[in-house]
Image 1 (spheres, helix red, strand yellow):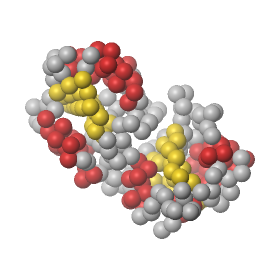
Image 2: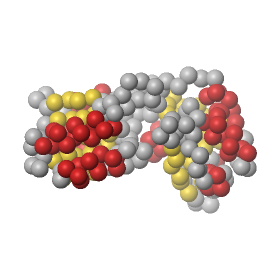
Image 3: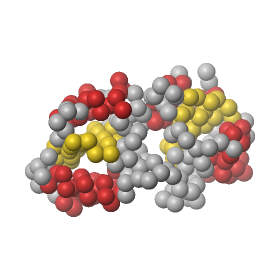
Image 4: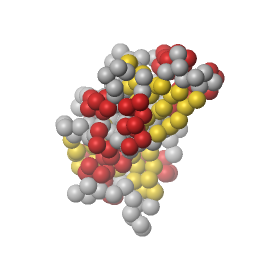
Length: 240
């Protein structure tokens, strides 16, 4: 096929944090398939003549099916178009990138992946804290709080997650965090372990809640899930 697909990572939402390569691909695109969380001012870099196609997937809302998104990528590439698949955060972190890549490989479509700033890095930077520190936070781990059913995954590594010398970032975990916290504490994590809830990072309404694992679990058990968020917990999460 003569078309080409660029998987462009939009980052957490701040258009000033786009890479130069990401901006160049957006400006050159004939078609842009974009996520809900990768829109707004970021799409200002797209030519007026380009076609914009919303394919966002949001929990609890009507969303494009993954098979439909993959099929659109192939179909637009088949016309010879320069296609951008604009994905929120970093395309390779909990973004179902592998399914879209596989569809392109089967169809013989060439592609590239342009990395971006993932939510954990953006949240820590916006909150003014590091993710790692020699001696006290030697390891960073990224996990998803939701499996394919939207429930807490059953095969998490509890020994790793309760390691006091690590920083853990939980993606898509607001709804399941009370259950996650209960299991963490049952496996030995101190309830007073610092936790940071970072909502809508990179947007004007971003919000940070510094608390503990136990208190955050109690808060989220009674709070409606609206804004997107990443949750950090570990020693560094409590720093101002």
